[in-house]
Length: 227
Figure 1 (cartoon, rainbow, N blue to C red):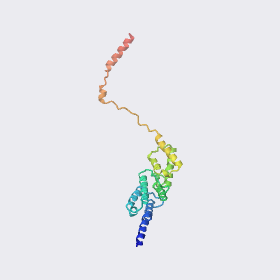
Figure 2: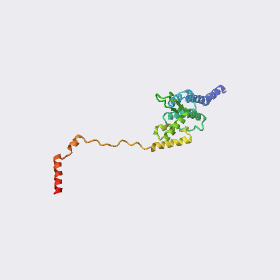
Figure 3: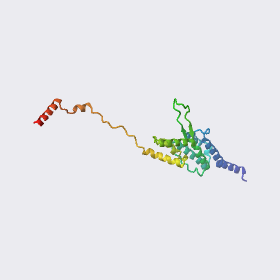
Figure 4: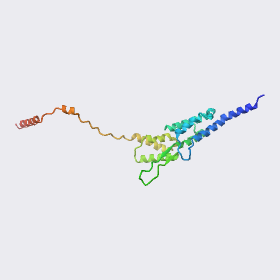
């Protein structure tokens, strides 16, 4: 006779592996990718470190390949952003969980306003923007620099590459124009080349006619012309 309790335990462990571990992992990953407070910046390097640590937990070790894959993908996204590279959001459109994680990763973008200059009438310190507000601030500054024909470095445009999924069609177009502007900007001319003066040895080696000989020769030429 088959002991039904064994069959029930098997079903329970199967459920825990298929559903329980996955739910536990998802809750843990969402917690890691959620800012501590609303409007606070999410450090991508710290997120990546915590996700790597999560791989050592039991929920990951006993989870399904699908559950592990979600953690691995999230860790790769955080690693890419930490390295100032654009993450490849493959499968996010077809996966509600990954789509939610992608949305949370917008909080990894920040913009720090410059603090007021010392002695100015304003005592307001630099304010940090996060997420979509940060992207708006970055884009507004880029537009101002382009209109003012200011110097724009490729390094300052890297943020638009890393967080390219947050750009709308118009912003992406302006970003491309800014990249082209960086390459088309003529390089500043360097100082004119001034040859070094000859050394003392070179000066002394130049054969010079004595002043008396030169004046005698000139007198001789004048007399010859008048003759």
